[in-house]
Image 1 (tube, rainbow, N blue to C red):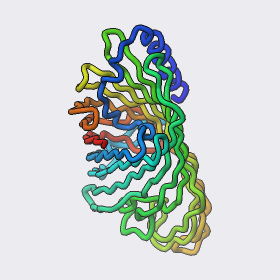
Image 2 (tube, rainbow, N blue to C red):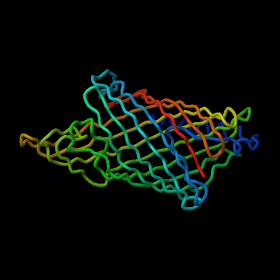
Image 3 (tube, rainbow, N blue to C red):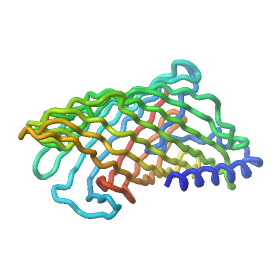
Image 4 (cartoon, rainbow, N blue to C red):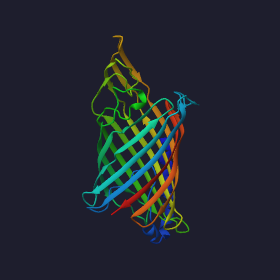
Length: 318
C-alpha cells in the first residue's frame, strides 16, 4: 500500500509538471479548503490564524481479523465527535498547531462522553510549491500528544478515549499545486507521520489495553504511523472535488503486570493496519472561508474495526 501511494503521487506530479508548462495563473486563483484527512502546510504569514472545526459521526460496521477477513460484531459502536484545528503563524514559515477533540461514544449497552488525547506540534515549511513546474513545497512537523483522555480505571472498555502515553509525533508533508488541461487546478498532498510513546504507561483495572478490574501493571504502546495521499480538483474557483487515501499502521504493544487473581501477565497485544478512503466535495466562499463535506470509510484492515464516517468541516483563515 505504501508503494502504491508513492507511485500515485509521483505519477500525478510528473503529469502535472508536463501540463503546467502551458499553465496560466489559474492555480493561484483557485480556492481550496480540504481534503478531509491530509494535513496542511505551515501558514505562509506571521500572525496568520486558521481555524477548522469538524463534526464527525462514525459507525463501526464490523471488524477485520488478523488475516484481513471481515466479519460483523455484536454491540456496534457509534461515535459523535468534534475536532477543532487551530493554527497560528509564528513566522512566515513556522506554525504552531493544536487539535483538541472530544466525543460521545455509545452502543446498546453503555455510553460515554470525554476528551481524546491532545496533539500539539510545530510545523516548518522549507519552501513554497511552484505552480509553474508542479514542484512541491515541503513541510516538516514535530510535536507531542498529551495524554488527557481516560484510558484506565474505567467502568467499561468503551469508556476509554485516551492512551495514557506521552507520544512523540514526527511528520513530513509534500504539497504540489499545478494546472491541468482545461485550466482545472489540482492540489496534491502526500504525507507520512510517525508516532512513538516516550515512556511506558502505568495501567490499573479496566483499560483500553484489554485489562480488567484488579489488574496492576504497565503497557508499552507500539510504534504507529500514518501514510496518506490527498487530492483536490478544481471544477471552478469555488467548487472542488476532493479525495483521500490513507493507511494507519500500529505495531504490537507490550503489556505486563499482575491480574486480580495474583497471576503474572506478560503479553504482546496485536498490531493493526487499516486503509480508508474519503471522497468529499468542497465549496469555497472566498480564499479564506470554505466548507467541505464527505464520507470516510475503511476498505481493508487487519486486527481492527471497520467503519463509515460522514463528516463536515468549516475552514476559516485570517
